[in-house]
Image 1 (cartoon, rainbow over the protein chains, first blue to last red):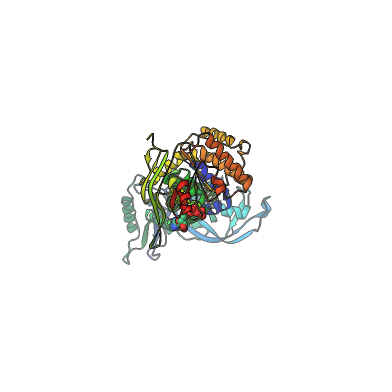
Image 2: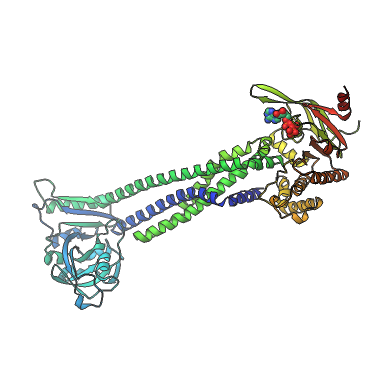
Length: 400
Length: 235
Ligand SMILES: Nc1ncnc2c1ncn2[C@@H]1O[C@H](COP(=O)(O)OP(=O)(O)OP(=O)(O)O)[C@@H](O)[C@H]1O
Ligand SMILES: [Mg+2]
């Protein structure tokens, strides 16, 4: 019986292909936007969390606020932070813009230009490449501890810098000028994904070079990365103690400590909020799609009054008629839902490709969306189906 | 008295409400049909023929009176049970055929068997043999729109017979056909009667009713036997 009803519903949907498709479109749009929003959101959030936890997860930024108390940290002082109990490493963050000049005569690549004003130059240490930008070397090598120690004239290009400067060409070994100082390119980075992607658009140099040759002053801000198995609060306390020892002041605190975990939590909260709103809008689209189904089913039922009367006269019980039309509605929204899932995954795959994070989805999301579309069919199909089931066969037959 | 008639109505009343006003269509109708009879109910338009047929066909129930079909009381039962009785015991033939136009002739004939939960293969075989019986086995795959009126009515008759119901119930079966085709359909009814089928046919045409072996008259919701009717006319 069920199979027969399925066949009847399928035949009826197939007879009105255009109408079926248009009605389904509402569900397709609703479900695909829900799927896209949720998977894109999850993907981006994962990427952010992944990057943040790649940063050691637990990370505290130390910044000098009052430069009259202290103008910058010396290498020795930085080493003191590095040696604190539970600290994995520190990552200075110096960034200033400088003019870059390429040397076209030395290469066979096609340059668009040779001089780029106001490019971001970042002074970093070797730890940056194992924490902030781990696993992301495209060509060559990263900046090493010796580069820091001996303040060598080397640089690593961020992905976008490399793209604008060199297009597709491996420039390792070439020389560029940063503010008229010669640097040898030793490496090129892959595209960074996450919250802090400033490296993409930067030229990375040993921070000691930034201090000594590029006139960026002293290190005034750096991140402390705390070991995973160390309690964050204990570490923050130790860092705080060291800071106040280094920067005693009678004018209040001269420095600030920012716990990155809090930032991360905030990011997740905001992403969730935005995605929740988007998913809410998508749910409204789905609701409208459901109303579309109800509308189409009501039209179908009244168009097929005579058929319903005949089926009843031939012995179809009310519940069989109900099931027939309910199945039709459910089939409509379920197929729409499945197409929507596929389309939504396609959209989110495209988004992950364009934004540059790893595409992934949860099976539970897909099952939930499919189940949801099933229920939309049931909820919006029940009223028209009941209308059909309750029809008086005599009056229905007469309508022909 | 031998065994009970196949179908027996006693003191049936049917009233429709027209807004506030009751309008009685059937007045104390008593009527029975024996197994194998071919009875025609003859009456002018508006006399209550279709109303009576709806009650006999279990599409509707009376306001009062008793209706027994194959030893079973049919008054006061649920819609589902009525549907089941229609499926098993009644074969309808309508004036306007009532075929589904999107499916083939054989699928139309198979329809009542779907609701009888008959397996698909058996359904097909039974439908094909019924189509053969009405002389349409070579049109089985045509849709109704690819058939003539007479052929459509034959398909409808095949559909009515496929469940081997207790009665074939026809409401103006020739109403939508030309005279010659109508006569062919009536020939088919006669031969079905010869095979022993019980047929109740409703018509307003004397000519058509003459194919039946017994005629009852309905006038303004009152039922009369042939003799009663003649006596009434003479008064
Ligand atoms: N649902 C209804 N509500 C109110 N009155 C009705 C209803 N159905 C039928 N009637 C009335 O009952 C009377 C008999 O109707 P019925 O359809 O049984 O006539 P009929 O003999 O079949 O006529 P015809 O030969 O024209 O088909 C008519 O006067 C009609 O108006
Ligand atoms: Mg009538």
